[in-house]
Image 1 (spheres, rainbow, N blue to C red):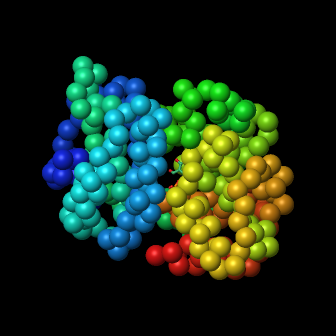
Image 2 (tube, rainbow, N blue to C red):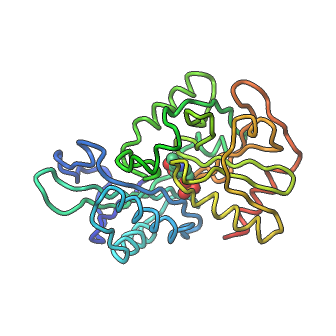
Length: 279
Ligand code: PLP
């Protein structure tokens, strides 16, 4: 069910070993990645994903990704895919072997996990979790790599497990000043009337390609959009709270920290329509 292409454009067996045991991506999570949604053979937001991978690579001081090689690698996976209408396409780019050598790069296509599909339909409960930093630290401490999509996602995965152990399917990180940040793998979006809001990348979050696509569509349809700091109280008071990411699309949050949120009729469907209208 998976399709693997190496960065040189060759197809490879996804069930065989290809990565050296001294690869720094494996040893230290020292690399970057992207996850792209492909629908009916067309990758969504490929340009913004490649731009963001280049930006993350620059933050980690990795060699600049070869855009043409990545485009070709993506095309090889798309051409070989025989799975369903939707694919999650991961691009992985690491610093390569510890002993030196070129970076490691590959693209891996696979199905969307059943849990993600279920959550798109049924919505999710979310818990707020302290991320442990003040947004002021972002500019002063570039080594924290806040806002880079690095392979060091163990903290993000631990937060998801913590949420699940506490009866939720999503986490929403909050800064030590109480400001809302993002989910471990998703952007926070709220809707109020005809306004969409999300939190600013200056607070150390990853700029989301799905949120950007939704906001683009919403503006064309006459909504207003704002990128500004949000508090947890804003999430509770909104007409709707959503988690946006490539594989989730726009997933509704129905419960926050154990309390049911407003359920404005047709709002989720309307946001889905807006997002889909971009493709
Ligand atoms: N924030 C984080 C930390 C993420 O890891 C992701 C994606 O995985 C997102 C936000 C959403 O980004 P996108 O919409 O580009 O998938």
